[in-house]
Amino acid sequence: MEVGVQHVKGRILYVEDHLDTYDAISILLELSGYAVTPAHTFEDGLRLATTEGFDLFILDYNLEGGNGCDLSRCIRAFDSRTPIILFSVTRGMDEQKVMAVGAQDYVPKLAGFDTLERAISRLLNP
Image (tube, rainbow, N blue to C red; front, side, top):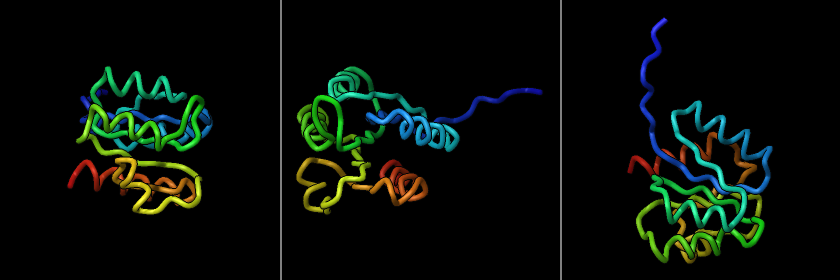
């Protein structure tokens, strides 16, 4: 059986402090054709964002050492183009708050993987 080279749809930095959530979402993203790099703290997320090239950032709100909104602002200080999705259970996020921190979208975790995947596809394939 010959194994072909699979086309990667995009490189994603996924910053998530809950390892179970990270594992489940990253497996689904990889099965959908994305290359996913993990970060589990604010500091690791910022370090990877500044040293690696990504097509999209997915940020949880609650992180060790900070939060996803602050991380989004930090990323925007050096990268104004790469799309950012806030992916969290945090309530009270609306379009104005998302845009104020430089993100393009907010996807509630309870909305499910299909909603997240549609947001990713829309941002990577405008």
